[in-house]
Length: 273
Image 1: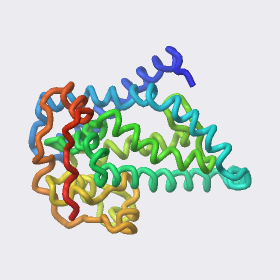
Image 2: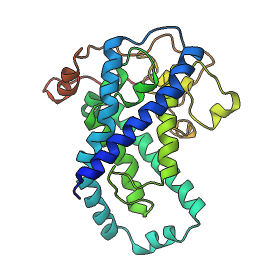
Image 3: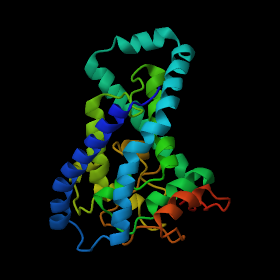
Image 4: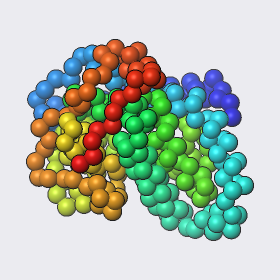
């Protein structure tokens, strides 16, 4: 599936509009309710570049694989299954798509920590020295592709989604909610949400996932924390992590951050708790 120039241009405009909206929403909130520290200028510039990469690169890298996967799923999955799923009420299909995608994202994220080859690329995301809403898109392109495939392939297999320009055919409402929530849980917001923390992920939940070494192999879920309880990786004490980031060295330049994981020297995965 080829991506036209017009489709690419629409994505660029949409991405810019999202950045304006997210900045207007999160910058005041982080100033009023966050820790009083400044985002390092170089890291902030890098995060802006990664924000651009996060939307544009998957268009190029995921369009063809998604089309091939859709065809493969059509032939590999029994027609009776996809027909049964298609006949479900819309609300139930949306809820099922959400849960299935979340389970896929959970395991894609967890394996990115547990498999040394995938950790080489995912470590970039954990190199952030301060939590900030743009930390959400601070990811290596390979890491982006792997995580999205884990979330999208099960949807294609069940007939809950089909390929589109952005490599995802999940319902638009889920994409909007998931996008905003990803920025929210990375944001520099010192909020605790009480009983809601049993139902949805929060900044406190995800900040512990970014804690420096101690609990980096916890709290993999992007939206549903019950998955971490189910698979034994949940951790949410009443206090906040003292530090975030990694002790292991990482490249200071943007080019180095993108190229280092492709070189022979491998970054070791963090030791499991």
